[in-house]
Image (cartoon, rainbow, N blue to C red; front, side, top):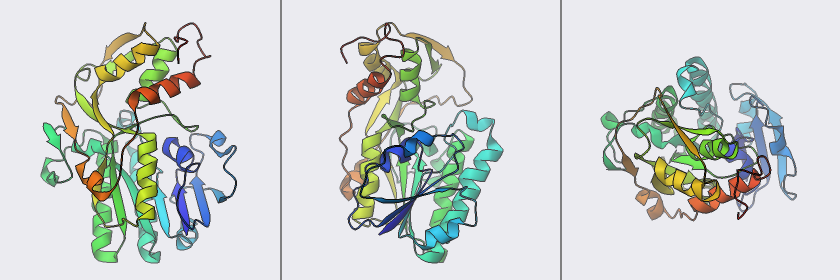
Length: 317
């Protein structure tokens, strides 16, 4: 089996390419345009895997020859910072919409199955427990980023009906967990970075006690490996969520290792007013399992930063 991973050097990709557990794996194409210059993600890759790195934009016509040689495309390339996406609408449209259109059409043309990471942010403002059966009319994404992911979901459904594309969509909770290519713009990781640097932790004014879905990085990677191994390309949407937490829940864990954190409440263009839980029941019934633990993940990430500000972090990691 040959696979291609776009955005291969990013937060998810840099961990995934070190933890592929796919039988009969032959070649792994790693596609990244170095927009965020994460060269270090290519250091010390495991031996025994036939990697082929390509510095390439996903809008390139050269993607066709790669996808033609692949059985599965894992499409991780995306502009993912939801809050900043308000200022980067043109880039979000180019990468998240046009880029997906380009690779998805090649996948349909060459019978290459596609894994598409969407986001639980497509649910937008909700109440109570929500799942994949939520009506389209009830999906209210709150940012250009989330809107682009909902667009992608509908695009793939259309290509499946009209061009026989085989795919699976993951609505991922906010990712937490260490990888060599990680960034620090999403909730858990951003809070860890700010606390480790002795900065005030910036929390949206409405968010402290609102519950939101999160996904451990290992759980995300295990789900990707599982659907490839079991060939779960059923053109369905699955919530991939480890746990639903409030911001206060997260900060309480960080305080165990960095007790003197300061919270700064800030305004944000994304100001959801309601708490909601996202159900992972459908993915569990499919056979996907969850084992990540928030406390262990936070401890691991803080431990990686322990010597940056030695006096700030408790030495009982």
